[in-house]
Amino acid sequence: MNFTESELLRIFIGEQAKLHHRPLYELLVSEALERGMAGATVFRGLLSFGLRHKVHTSKIFELAGELPMVIEIVEITEKIEEFLPVVETLLRESGAQALVTREAARQWTT
Image (cartoon, rainbow, N blue to C red; front, side):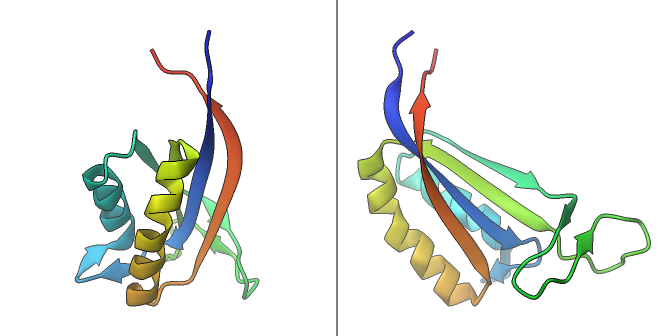
């Protein structure tokens, strides 16, 4: 197998984050698609806490949950670099709290 040196871009936002009446995670994935990124995946968290140390859970009694949505994109470094200003703009315009991380990855696709 031949692996390509890449990066994993991970964006953590709340499920209630919106911009222009659309979920922010949908906008981020749409922008990644428009810019020719190899792929993006969104995960919904079951339990989390963040800067305010408030626990968010998916238990049935919590009516207005604010669970984390995690968007992951694996791509070559150059494309990640080009996409970061788009991410920053969407996050700023939405006013959403977010955590954005990058880490080295090696990808192999069939």
